[in-house]
Length: 354
Image (cartoon, rainbow, N blue to C red; front, side, top):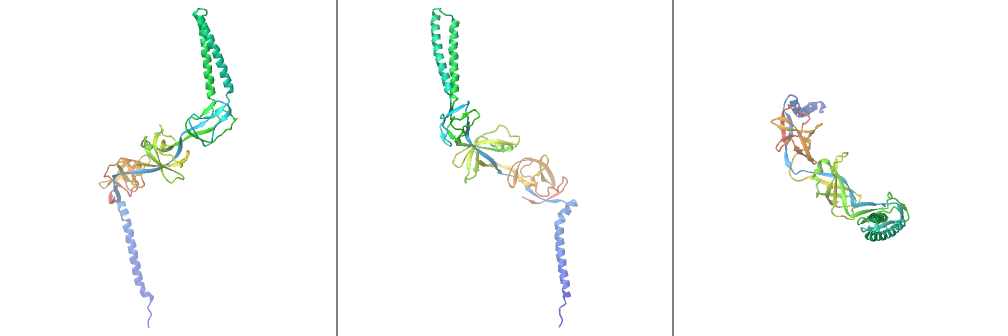
């Protein structure tokens, strides 16, 4: 009985290896064929996109800060000792309510003294006017007495103004903050007594890139969120700054919060969600078609089998497309692949057009 020799299987194995090697070599040649054609002066195979119009919108998220509609630091106008303090921390106050009172007895005494002097000066003036009727006194003396009466009246008004400065009143309806002084303390115009905020209405301040500055006109609605709240809030633009900030190249915008709630606190951080564009039709192209240059941006347009390098200006963009504001027209075919290998004298062959 004869055993099968393993050497008889060698021809079959060798034949199989030759087939596998030939197949791999064929695929390699097919993969490198376009590059070899391009190196030999043949057309470069590229993919293109036909420029079209689309309703394009760009979603931005910028930081913002909630501000009270009005906020005032309550400080005295003059120096003095606090003799009355009506500051309930966190309490609501009405406009005109007296919050603090400074010592003013010296001013009150000065006022009484001037009032007595005024009464005497008025009586003197009346007597001199009677004497003038019978030529018992000169007109000059009467005029001097009248001047004295007016001077005393002016001094009385000055003292009354000084007395009014010893009273600190709420300038508007609002909510008081923390109290920083105690009764009997000596205060100066630099002393902070408390703060008053109008929290029934809030404002939202945020910055937008300068290229979007013209889009934020009075009346535009924006949406924002705050930490700890599960819903979105809206605000209406009431004004913008008159100049762009040079350091950040951004424009400050102020909006009025539409409806206040307990979830919104002054000073809170807000995420402002902006949807730019979204109205009208924009001329668009895929973002990978735009080639950034040192001073401009370019795209390559397929034109009769040759590349046409064009400088373009861009606008809005989303995750896939960018708006072309200048340099292209609807129906142009821009190239998406092989952009770095294409030269002005290259020959092109479109293999796919989107």
